[in-house]
Length: 191
View 1 (cartoon, rainbow, N blue to C red):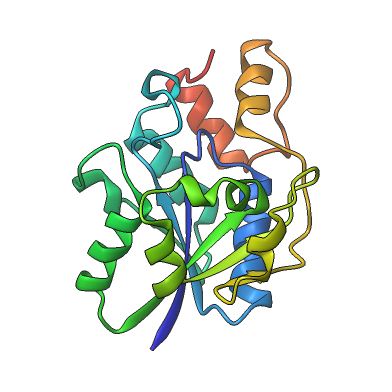
View 2 (cartoon, rainbow, N blue to C red):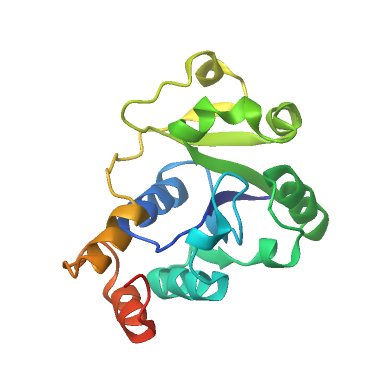
């Protein structure tokens, strides 16, 4: 049974913070691999603020090219929107019965986890690998048997910061892989 970590996100755009988290989870925990699940629409985010989902998927593919343990997934592109994690998990479980899926999330998401659709079922049926986020404390949920707190390196970098830097015509070198920067430039994204 392959242990597959699911790292959900908008990846608008993907950056080194995302890559460090995924690499840590794939190489320093019991996970065999990590899938970047590109969300067409997060129920907690406005759709108009998101880049085209195919462009975001392509940026993830460019960022992880050559990695054996990291993969990009467009599984939510064909599911009803907005995407709810429980629906995606059920769909993946049916499509890949020989894999065990584990959720990867930041402690900031764990703080509000009880507001998620069917959070109780997710905690009952799935494991959660949680990376630290400064200034957040999920309190009692940290002790839940389904939750594993990790020592993932902490990096304060966000896609919002990168989009604002692009709009202000500031350098984003080293914040995201060079191939992603070239793609953003070629497409004229975020400017």
